Amino acid sequence: MPTHSVSAHHVRAVLLGAERRGVAVTPLLARAGLPSTLADEPRARVPAEQFGQLVRMLWATLDDELIGFGGAPSKVGTFAMMAHVAVHGSRDLREALRRCQAFYSLFPAGPRFRLVEPATGEAGEPDEARMEFDVSAYDDPLHFGAESTVLVAHRFAGWLIRRRIGLRRVEFAHPEPRHAGEYALLFGAPRVFGAGRTAAVFDRADLDEPVLRDAAALEVFLRRAPVDVLVCADYGTTATGRVRHLIGRALPAGPVPTPEQLADRLSVSPQTLRRQLAAEGTTYQRLRDQVRRDHAIAELAGGRVSIERLSRQLGFSEPSAFHRAFRRWTGETPRAYQARPRGDAADVGVVGRGERFVGRGEVVVGRGERFVGRGEVVEGRGERFDGRGQSRRGRGQQP
Image (tube, rainbow, N blue to C red; front, side):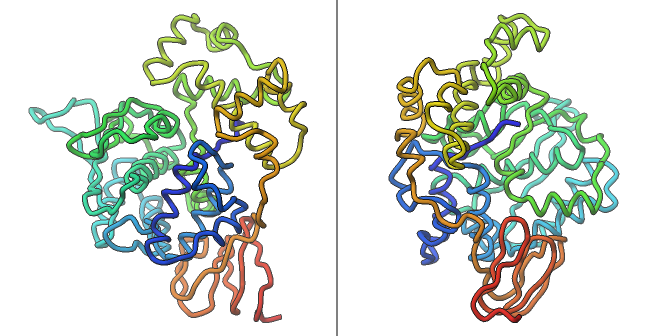
C-alpha cells in the first residue's frame, strides 16, 4: 500500500487556529515527532500518521473539530454524532447526506452544506449532483478549512457506500492558491477556482447506492480519524489511483514499472493511459515521483534503511541522483531529513477538561476525563493517550 505524506503547508495551516488562540505550537509539534523548524521549510513533507496525531492533539487542545477556522467552534464529538445519524437507518446515500445536512443545520458552527439535485429546467446537468458548502463565515486565509470540509464530506460519503465516489470536479470560491498542485492528489479530479460556491460534483446515480456500514465499522472509522479521511486517498476507480497503487506495490523490491508496463497491466495502450492521466491533471512522471517521495520520507523517518540502499530501492542509478531528487522534493538532503530530532510521537498530548469524544460516538462530561482511543474513560490530571488507544500514566494519575 502506498505511504502518503503531507506538505509542510498543511502543517502550518492546521497550526494557525491554535496560534490565534495563544496555544504554544512547539510542544505540539514535538509530541507529534515533528521539528519546530518545519514552518521554515516550504517544500518539506511529513508522514501521514504524524500529521494525523497533530490534528488529534489540536482537536483536544481547542475542543474544536474545525480547529479554529469556523465562525464558531464545533465541539469534539459533533462529527461522531453526525456519523451515527447517517449510519443508523439510512437506506441510501441520498438519505444519509440529507440527514447530515439536517444535523449540521442545528449548530451555528456548521459546517453548513446542502445536497443539490438539479430539477428539469434548472441550471446544472440533470445527471449530476452537488454537495455545496457555505464557507463564507470561515476565517481561513490558507484555505485549509474549505479544503478539509470538502475532503471529509467526499471521503465520508464514499466510506458509507464502501467505494470511492468519482468526482466530476471540485469547485472552490477562493482563488487558485500557491499549493494548488496538492489538489490533484487530494481530490483526483479537475479543479475550478474562483467559483460561485465551494462544491463537490459527482454522478447523481451515486445517491442511489445503499449505505453498507454499521456501528462496528463506524467505531473503527472514528478511531482512525483523521488519517484515513484527510490523507489516505483510495482512487481505485481512477487512472491516477490505479497507477499509484501499482507503483507503490512495486516498492521496496522494485523496479518501478514503466509507463508501457503499467498500460499493459491496465489493459490499455500507453497513449490511452497518458490521456487518462492528463484528464485527471497529472502525469506518469509526477505520480512516480510522488510515490517515491512518500516512500523515501517514511523510510527515512523510521530509520529502517540506509540512504544508499534506499536510493537503489527507488530505482536511482546512484545515491547522488537520489540526493538531488530528494532535495527537489523537500528542500533538504536525505541525510539532513534522517538526522532531524524527533519527539515522542506516541505521546500525543493532554486533553483538557469538559466534553470529549471517546471513540464510540459517546460524549462524557467532567473535569479530568480523557480520550484514550477505544472508548475508555480514565481520570486523573496528567493522563495521556497514544495513537493505539492505550493510556499512559502521567503525573497525578490514580493507581
